[in-house]
Image (cartoon, rainbow, N blue to C red; front, top):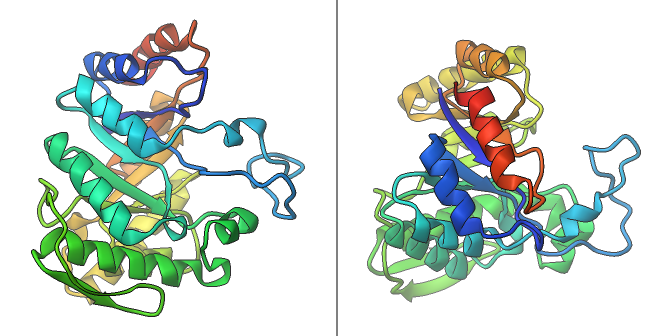
Length: 280
């Protein structure tokens, strides 16, 4: 099982380049960073990770994952670099395609594009997304980016994004493009993964849900004429080596573990302890 580490980079994290180098040296296979460009002061949306639905203050102090991963790429040579997740409806796909291609190119082909559409309606709408149809919008964005990554002259004509032939360089190192992993457990997530993704990355998964997800993905891939082995499952936020083993037995290919603290005085020791516990 490939095991990576996810970290919420904020104003107190310290040197993310040094952190990434340490994670690579300790044997972590990948490094993942989340995204919230903004957090509205007043919201009616409820966060699923707290008992009362309140939004943790730390969410408003997240560094831009693409800048952070670019810094990390400069101090490392082999660790994969992923977003977990990037909020697709909050970005312009022409600009984002350029950012991702540059990051993949300059890192030597090490980027994994973990995507989602978010739960915070107010944030999505402030940033220009269509919250009620956010997965339809995300699909168009990914389709447009794939055109930009794979063609010297790319165009796209959809409902949300419509542009004539354009040239965008550099192209990503990975062919045909960096892998696209979809987060979440929405009703249609497996259809979406098979249709335009390369992996599924559930949060708060169980071995039973992973086993069921693997079966659903395999069945849909077969029906679509696609090799089921081309679709990866990444467990986001595993808490123990035993859990990682259970997830692997259930059909997962990759896992991430959470750094217990982002306190700059504790982050390196915490990373070493995490490696001892999770990597052996």
